[in-house]
Amino acid sequence: MTMQHTDDLRRSPFRSERVAALLLLLAAVIGLVVANTAVGPAVLDLMDEHFAVPAIGFDISLSHLISDGLLAVFFFIVAVELRRELVIGELNSLAKASLPAIAALGGVVVPAAIYLVMTAGTDLAAGWPIPTATDIAFALGILAVFGSAMPTRVRVFLMALAVLDDLVAILIIAFFFTAGVQFAWIGAAAIAITAFGAVSRLLRPRSPWVLRRRPQWPLIAVMIVLGVLAWFFVYQSGVHATIAGVALGFVIARRPGGRSVHALEPWSNGLILPVFAFSAALVVIPAVAPAQLSPAFWAILVALPVGKLVGITAGGLIGASIFRGRPGALRWPDLLPVAALGGVGFTVSLLMNELAFSEHPLVVDEGTLAVLLGSGVAIVVSACVVSWRARHYRRLARERTPGTAPSAAA
Image (cartoon, rainbow, N blue to C red; front, side):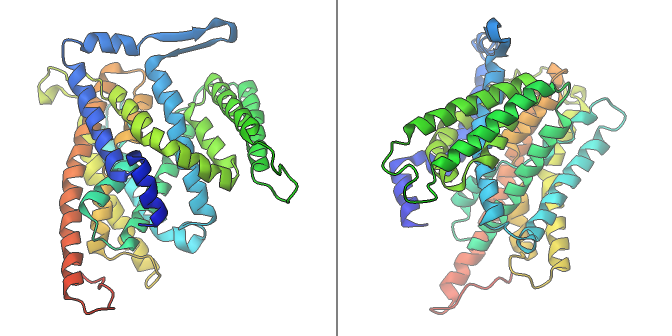
């Protein structure tokens, strides 16, 4: 951990991966409990309250303001970090990206296949993307809590895999959950996004006289306005509004993007993601026998922890055999913790669930419960696997002679 990162954590504990994971879990549990108490109906009614501005044709419920609006900030942060990894980070070449990419592909294909097999013969096939997502905040939080002794290469591989997994989730939302696109609004959004990117480059002087000694807050204010307009235009277009956050994250200049993430990260970890988890977990537990639950419930419950574990492990081993000897490859004992952590779907899986079953409210509720339970199983399994592997590295650290690096062998 760098000195800068340590100072940041002292100033704001909400930058901590452990704190972020804990807040997500607490918010989801509180939401589930609240929904099943006497105040549950009132809170659910509040979530259905609409905010409308008839003059501009804008109408949105509180629940959609959270999932479409606040979550766009989270996707903005994801996009900035993804772009950084693609430009100067662990994914800046085909060689570096190939190993985690193959593992990520396995972690998408196998859970989707399990879901489709278990729901075959029903009209629930639209839910196949739900178990394909990995919650990067939760996964890194569990690794930080239980795997402090793990080598850096494991965290780097997990980060790269989760970033690629987020990219797949973004593409799924864009291509599979968009209908009736209004291209006039898309054109307006494109103009606002392009202007946002152009203004961001004025915050990064290219020569000594550009913006020298001039206050930059007017440009920041303009960027905020353009960002809000871009979100509004995308929302009106029929495309899921979180895609606006993705587009803005990809076009912002690198240095302003980094500063934006630094400023927004505590708000995302401490407020936005917990509020979304609370909102998404507001589900009344159905008073039905297990046999009466829909096939989607069981498919998600199995595909998240099992499908991710099998898919990422298989993909990682295939990648390691194809690119034998390449730096960054993990042997199976180090790959298992990463694969287990991939089964924690949580935030993005909950969003996928809402999108996939938007026309089936009862299935949405069952899907939410399945995501929470499946992620819970993955949390327990990954905590055990990570702890097991971390003990191995702690033992090696005690046994090795000074100056000798820990072995990668099992």
